[in-house]
Length: 279
Image (cartoon, rainbow, N blue to C red; front, side, top):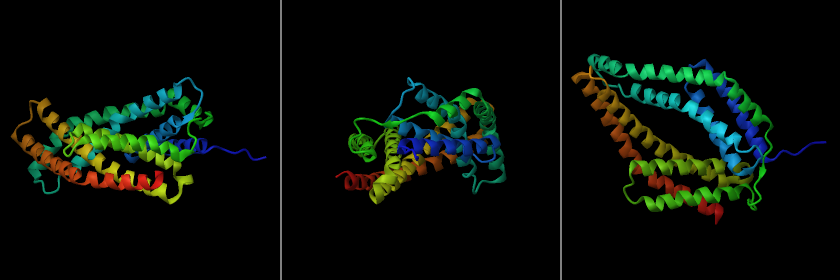
């Protein structure tokens, strides 16, 4: 006798496999993508749970938030380091030297964050979390009367409402919030994609594009702020470090401007895809 498995249970099992695979990559430490994909898997699991009914007293979502937070500092620093290292094209030898001095503290900070992630992945608390994910029973919520596609409606409306309120020149914080709302819509659409056909897949692609553009804007804002703080926090830095920091800030500002020029058109594609799907 073959027992049927709900789409929610199957999705969690798939993401648990991702945790195992990318956990090994993260422990090896050579590829920062391992930590990134762990966080993606956690977001997807949380999206499933929020669209489902399960009985654990709220512990599972709490533990997922904890694990996500443990990974955050290292992921943020990996993104920053990757951006900064890619920004040295055209730097002179003296500027490269100043750049390396500027990033010395950042590398030390990353070492601490790396140790934290290693301890977390090898710890009993994370092992217990994976055991819980392997056995938790989830079912669709009673109010999801139209199936998984119905779960797209709420995050889409929240995104649309946020865009309508954003105005023609949103603050950086507003664009960051829109990114979060777009991400929630994307994960809801991914969950529905196997049953929803081409229309849902189109929405997934559109929301990913919007998320990428707004994510680039947020990363550029964070990078600019970090560069400024690196200079301000070390009194030993002089004119050479300040000059290099200025060049880095200039490039991050250019990226922010490019993202601001693109995000609304990307949202319109999301809006078209959602309207076509939901009617």
